[in-house]
Image (cartoon, rainbow, N blue to C red):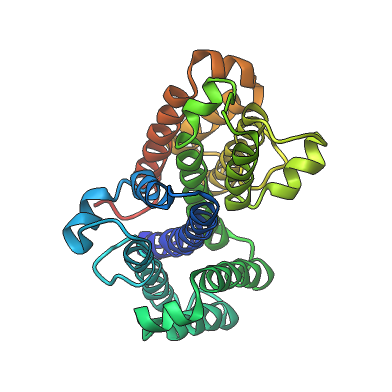
Length: 311
C-alpha cells in the first residue's frame, strides 16, 4: 500500500473518533454545568483546560461563556479541533480514498459533512447542544459500523483502526487526568451527591456508565472508575483495550517484521495487562497519565516513520 493511502486511512479514522470525543465531552460538560449551582463557568473553563485550548479560545472569543465554548468546539472554522474541522478533515481524507474504501463508507461520511457544512450558531442553538452532540455520536457510530461491515479486513482496515484507537486512548487519558487529584485523595468529596453526578458524567462521557454498574454492582467510587477506564480488558474505551487493539493491528501490518511502533505499543500494553490500580495510584495517577500521553505521541510518531508519510 502507498504511504499516502495509509496516511489518509489513519487520519480519516482518527478525525472521526476525535469528532465523537468532542461531542461526548461537550454533552457531559453541559450536563454538569446545569447541575452545578453557580459554578457553570468553572465547568466550561475546565473543559478548555482539558483540551489545552485556553489560549486559542481567548484569542478568538475572549471571556469564557457556554455559548462561546460551544461555538468554538463545534462550528469554529478556525479551530482545527472543532467538530466541523474534524469532520471536514475526515471527509477530505476519505475523498482521496474513493478507489479504496467502499461506496457506503464514503456516502455515510459525505452525508455527515453535507449536513454539518452550512450549520451556523443560530441553528445550533435552536437545535440544542445535547441533540447536536447525540447526532455527531450517532454519525460516528454509523461510520465505524459501515466500515466494519463493508471494508475488507485487510491492511486498509487496520490503518483506519489504528487511528481510531490511538485517538480514543488520548481522549480517555485526558478525561481521567482532569479528575486525578480526586482519585488520589480517595474521592473524599464534601458532597457525596455532587460527587456521584460528577463521576457519573465522566463515565457517560466514555460510554461506560452502564458498564460500570454491570462490572462492580456498587456505588461509584473514583478508584474503580480509574480501574475501569485504565485496566479493564473488556471496556472498549479503556487504555488497556485501546493499546491491545493498536498492538493487534500493528502486528497484522508488520507481517513478521520487527517494527519499533509495534514494540512500543506492545511494551506499554504489557504494563497495562499486568498492572494493578493500587500501585498506579500509590505512584501517582497524574504522572502515570502524563506518561500515557507521551507514549501515545511516541507510538503515533513511530507509526508515521514505519508506514506513513514523514512530515
